[in-house]
Image (tube, rainbow over all chains, first blue to last red; front, side):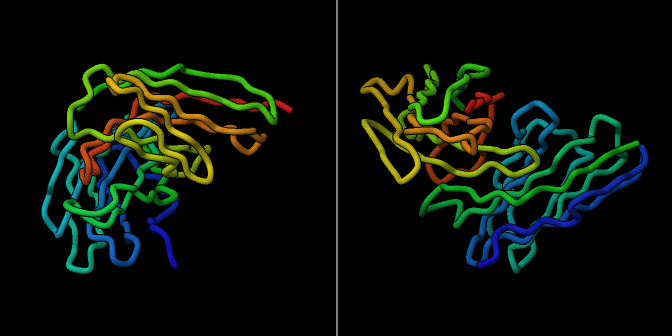
Length: 115
Length: 110
């Protein structure tokens, strides 16, 4: 069975540009969450989506947005990139927002470098 | 969401038992205690979750006292491959809005 897949694995962007990161959850999982992990720190929660609706948002500026598609895959968009957006972006999937095991399965992440 | 506090780092030797304690004084009634492991350049991996008393699986045990204000992750007979960062989280059951702290960096030495 395929795990959580994220694309691309690495990305280099210039300040001011926009970036889209993609995540495919484990088959059957309906909840997707996004995290940002800066080097040396723990992952910071950005968004949670369940059944295509936003169910949670962390303390990130409006430059960050996301959506979930009918097939439960998700995209994270970041506009007007800043140097401080350089980080590992992690996607986690789990069976559902309500009911079931809360164990979250993380992908390998997308390493974003802003120059 | 309850804040957690855990040691920044720990050292151990191969074959020893490692216990990492986490405090979560403001844990709420519906919160569960969850531990994740993370290797460099990889996403975190679920280790164990519990609500009270003791939980054991094939890789670890989780001890939670009656007041639930702390918990201890126990790793039996660690090996070099257990060198990683371990995160303690308090999670509202069925809610994946997980707030990670800085974690505990465990180094296992030969």
